[in-house]
Image 1 (cartoon, rainbow, N blue to C red):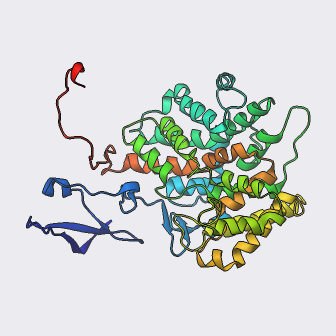
Image 2 (cartoon, rainbow, N blue to C red; image 1 turned 90 degrees about the vertical axis):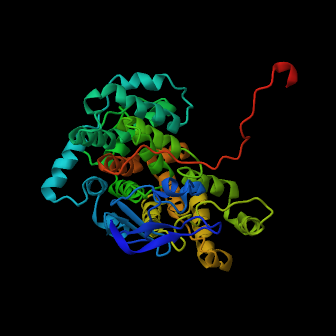
Length: 433
């Protein structure tokens, strides 16, 4: 973080003295005005609902340029990582700042693989939930409960313990997600297998059963791995900010990740791919697309287009192009090009890429549109989509949490407010109310 030669000067029209504030430059991206002394010097706060213009931390993990459609993990473009690396290499990169060499990759992969089992008592937690409980509700409970089992890695001031917690979370999330699925369909839990890759092991725990051997399909495993890489981190989004805010109080890492999962559960955040698939099912068939698009264009219809456009990416979502390739690969591998739902999705994609209404508004299909289709083709139920997202994003959360704990400028989060309620008043006796 370099201080700029220029300063920002805040002046007041009421004659109050003006205030100079330093400006900091990042490696790339907008400069930031340091307003930490603003309240002390002026008695005033800034007002920024949604923190749209406020940097709450400095970070060296992920960078997004929404106008360019650029997403970098530790400086590496997402397009290159998704093609040249697997998910655990990406995890190593996000945690440690550099890609692993062959020896580091083997050690890291072995360590994660050997931590994939969860304590046998965790099985009893699942029995406490109704069978029709939403998987995210189950995950909030079970991930938070990990703190009850691993007292030996809860000291957040010990870098070694933080590392052990990070490994445990990355390793155990797939097991917990798969257990949530198996519980919901009344099938026995499948133990992880150490001879399988991270994504293949998850597919095995999801879809194998004790009656017959599960055959791993490399195309489908690679598709899942790509979903995980593309969702691994996304800068200071709502759930990551939640993890950082929870962590700023000194809460243990399992509690912080459970808080992130709770935030991700919200439909405006992690539920977007679920909403996109629900929309496709509501359209029903290719024949209904023209009338649906007319409703989308009519501001008074209340019909929303899900899975298109992005709050941050004002051009195209770089993850969507990669997910589109994967989507077509998976549909071809499984022979689903003629399935009515997928046919409908591909036709909607074609129209959105050609129709002037969508093109002029930059409403391109986003990563959620394609990942919903891919997950559905893989046999993952819609209710579990956000659970897969949580599994992917856990590495981002834990890397961001780790960075925050080690940051000497880190303080407990304490946003301010503009109070618009009643001024001081006296409590009247009950007969005068």
